[in-house]
Length: 367
Image 1 (cartoon, rainbow, N blue to C red):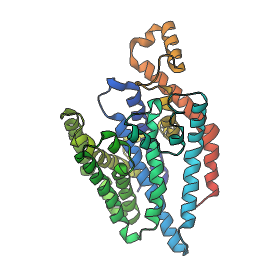
Image 2 (cartoon, rainbow, N blue to C red; image 1 turned 30 degrees about the vertical axis):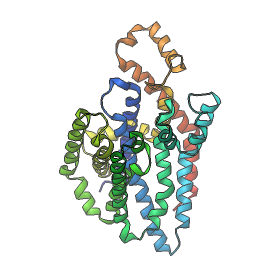
Image 3 (cartoon, rainbow, N blue to C red; image 1 turned 90 degrees about the horizontal axis):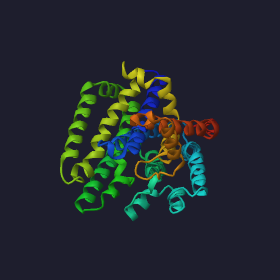
Image 4 (spheres, one colour; image 1 turned 180 degrees about the vertical axis):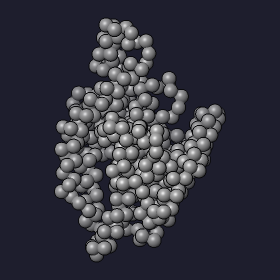
């Protein structure tokens, strides 16, 4: 297996790709016919399932070796997770509320309790330029219950438990589709996303308990290419079948997308060869992957195709630049580069001024 450094480097590269897909999806709007953002979010979900499950399995093993209960591991897990996630999130929500950013005061209590996905289901409406925060709510809700479930599930039942989560998620989507529930419900609720987390968890279980099987599986071109072909065929069917919300979009899409994401992540753990190695381990890509939380958090605030008003500061600056240099309007690439640069600037400031200093405190809390 590749050493730990290569593993971390390529996963950072994948984070960069995932967040870039989401950013492009929200910035291009109707000009983009493909579910780039959906794929990027699913890649994050599978990656979270892999990393969290592996951490918790190792914690469970260490607790057993030391003859202690799981209270210590639970405490450390939540402290470390919250140090990474909460500070910049709550600071951002507070600032947005103070400047009356669209929708923030209306949904303030939903935002601070990580329940905006519930708001979306109840109102069957998005939240404007902060609607992307539904996926952070899903992740936080997953973090709340999964550590307890895994740590208190005996080792011999872990794999069965992970498959059960996947099955539960698929069954819930089938039931919602069969009962004609609004499509947003299956899209944003945490239980209907569990197959993504569960497939990442199975990768983690394999790497811990069946290392050779893990290596055979993820290095198999049959798995990677097979899941890619399945994804492309499914994507074609999903985009061509009428009506536009159908069995493929509402039931099978997340599972098939997650299988392909799992194949990508598994190969990245061992290390892609060239030319993908050069992309995933590039210093720029790994840095952007490192600050991907900030990129995700801020990109919709910088611009959203559907919700950003022409009077918003980022667009006013852009329009002023275009009036001075009309050539900037010759291709959408210049505008995308402008939005990307602004988002990277905000995320870099956030990382170096807020996230990294607070994140360093995690060293005081070891498993």
